[in-house]
Image (cartoon, rainbow, N blue to C red):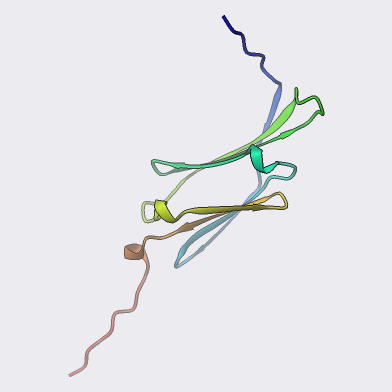
Length: 110
């Protein structure tokens, strides 16, 4: 039988900026101190989950976790969602599907 040791966790909600335009949404989450290996972005059944963990102690026994979840609009193309992480800022691009994007309809005269 194995036993797991639980590490004390401090959980915070990262500050998020959300921008919307005709092409979709852009989310920017501040997660300072999170290493690349401590970052997870998941999209499942219309729910976007952002997770990041960073150590609070050198021995790795204490860490802080960032957690945030969003319901994603149905018109988002899940296959085209992308994420980029640099300098503690996670950027997630959520493009609308082509069918949902506004388009101009040409008018034939005559």
